[in-house]
Length: 385
Image (tube, rainbow, N blue to C red):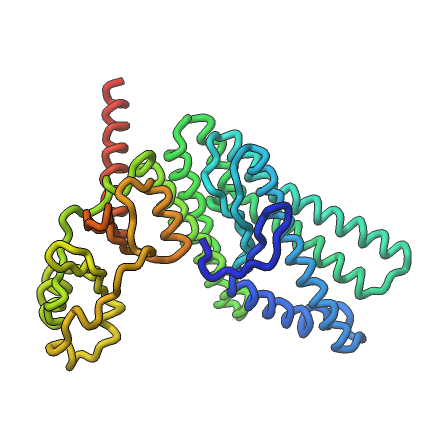
């Protein structure tokens, strides 16, 4: 899911990763705590103490997010769903499942595990904080514990909002799924709630900007935008899974794709195929033998004035296993490859023979057709009843 995530360590066979964006957010939060929040709580403490408190708080937040996702992962594994890794990213964390929950019951228990852990952490930090007050511990320790308790409470409550793909949205999806016995319908309805929440957050962010709260306003707008994009991406993923269930690359690929000879001039390829036929990914063949491919990334690296005197054979990309798929490969595996590598176009090859080309557009086209047919059949069945 996160191609650039860096593995930090493993816990009970869960790979713990961190996305580059999370490091930036961690640094910003640490700076904000050390320069704004803790100086207001303890104005007489030196800057070094504020910085130490901020670092400890950030480490506590890291551990809290990790435990939140570990709770999801442990329950998922208990229910027979393997977790590949846990990744902390810009707005929290995600446990990367090898498959979706098979039932509404499994979806429910996996979803509630995370907020339950956050509630427990909030209660635990406050209990430890109360003990620290009773033992006359330093004000710095008490302030850090209080902050972590409050953050975990907010994390639990926010995640319980009935907005997919938040945990509360997954609970809502599980309830609708249980009532209707229709996972796709449940996903659509839960996604609608996520979309509504996203627009509400963005509206609140804009209102905050008008009131002069620039930082909080921008932050709220950013979170709303993330929820909106995540909701749409999750729905698209579920629609694709539904449309491709049990199907292979052969069902989705474009048969008899346009190819180009290595002797062709680059200018002709761009004029006739890229612009004329609107193809941005073209296999290169010679007398029926697959040699490689040429795409927009290759063309972009060649100056326009050199197009007319440049042969395809001089610039094409050779055979690369990363862009070749077997025709009988399950589409679910292809989507995993796409999310892990970010690659969007592939050649379908069998015994060194080019059978077709598979692109994101092919997946979207078939997915749209399948879901439209499904909606039509559902409407017809209701009318017949």
